[in-house]
Length: 327
Ligand code: DGY
Image (cartoon, rainbow, N blue to C red; front, top):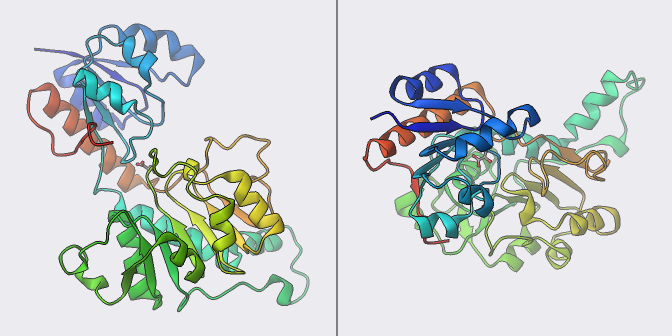
């Protein structure tokens, strides 16, 4: 039987067509004021939701009495009111696995750009300020051979670790809730990656990369104390979730501490507010949350999310279900 699906963020046409072939579909993006009334109206009868980057909170769920499944075109699930989903038995699907290598590429690019001052120096050329050979004041810092400290060591963290250890000869330290059995999960990193307590990692790493999901445990994890523990001249990169970092503390560490620079793909508020001091800070390389934003990967994510939604509405168990009861 045809059911009602609400698509709340643009889907590629081929994936939208898969939904339309089997169900009644409303496409309405609540971030666009003109589409908000249609979005709100569709919630009343929608059994399935698919989209990303919009808070699905208690109030929204209360307006969606028939909802059975949400398929998020993202791996992160911090936009969803997990306890309410668990209480109502609403299935939450997401997209693990298909974006790991792409996000790792992005984070490594940001790490390289931050250490080697790529954006700043490219702008120097673009602005016509390359009038003589650059001097020490504009030199960058080596990446190869430096010690990488990873906060979070899931699939994406491990993909970053492989690039660092196997491609750049970097010793890798990681901090995760529990040590990963490298022999089973990442044999190529055996002898190359070491689990350690957060404080020790911060004190030893030349480059710290945060790849943490946002949860009660990780919110604001990097604060003044943690930045102060970092090595003098260290570099901080965040490719996980912005709110795992206390941005005021990061700015303090950049302005008055010994942190050399930061590369950020994620922020506590996105898009980054126009008046955020992070936007034009000379020591910050900022990207507009592009971790997974390639043609191939965004399509693969949309395809997986669409498949999961169709499976769930057909009464099948989708492969990529997030366990809302464990967080
Ligand atoms: C995700 O899928 O959660 C990523 O942040 C998207 O880039």
